[in-house]
Length: 232
Image 1: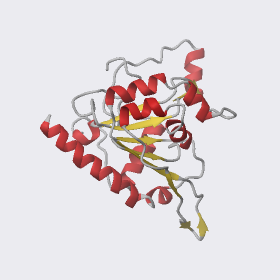
Image 2 (image 1 turned 180 degrees about the horizontal axis):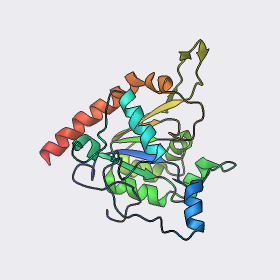
Image 3 (image 1 turned 180 degrees about the vertical axis):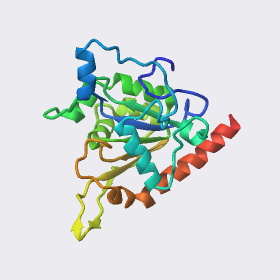
Image 4 (image 1 turned 90 degrees about the horizontal axis):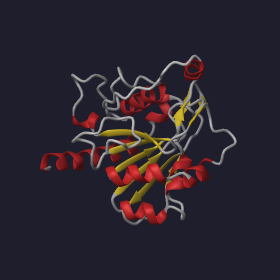
């Protein structure tokens, strides 16, 4: 597991049955580009739990931590307060590429074509809950091209994804209606949702509107995972 393409420290809490957070690829900011052009080494082999702000203080992480709080789960951001819940979360990306954006690219097909590292991560960790931060990731995961590999890890897919949008009014105007999609496999629950930094115009009240669905998925996963950790 030491060579898995994940950003999170793997330990007893998340080495099996974790909650896996999956982005599309590695971001590449203008500051990253500046440092590369200046010959600055940006590599950092130190890993910690997902919400450790001292290690993972990026906008993607910060927004996801905020979303968790909106759903009723406050994630500790320092080692002194972090418990098994925080340490049971793993962050990764499907693609191991770096880019400012993927405009003009068929993201679903790109993920199908380059699925080896992500499938390897799934085989190693066998997460019981996955959050995809792009709808295209779910469609790639559900694709006929990957079905044999995916079902070999998680069992049969149970029906089609259910996608929801909600009407949220703010200051008398409707919020942008983005999709949350929910999928079940025999040994896995999946939620796909807007990208935590790439969806322009998304608001906290829209994310919070999905609190019943998200707490109804996170809480059962956590209860079952706690039992596994106790019996390990």
